[in-house]
Image (cartoon, rainbow, N blue to C red; front, side, top):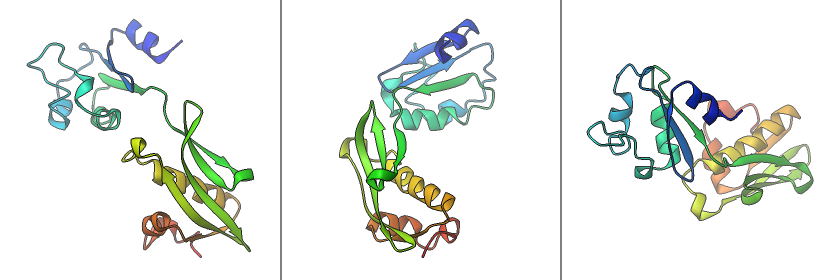
Length: 170
């Protein structure tokens, strides 16, 4: 059974667009107003319907809903971007509907991996996909006890001086 079906059986109402489904249950709501404070354009109690998912990106809406203390607001991202490690291609890839929309490439360099290039299609920019791509390479490197050389400007900037990456940096 889908999340939507399950929540609607519990009394949740659904508001949606092509990117996100937002669910709200008025009987669960504690009226803490975290949603209205988080984004008054999307969550406006003076308007009917009071939730308008066309007023912000799915990412922005999800960030606000994550602050809901009661669980009255929930969401599901439609067709999420999937990050895969593709060892045979020496890369991680971001896939949306099975299509590659971004990649982070590395080159084995002795006992290390050199991250050489990170790119995301411009239409998907600003969603944190590049960071997720680099993180996937780091995750695999850690699992294999492999060091990383961040040659790519994005990876270098992302990792520079950060405590959480010191264990893999060469």
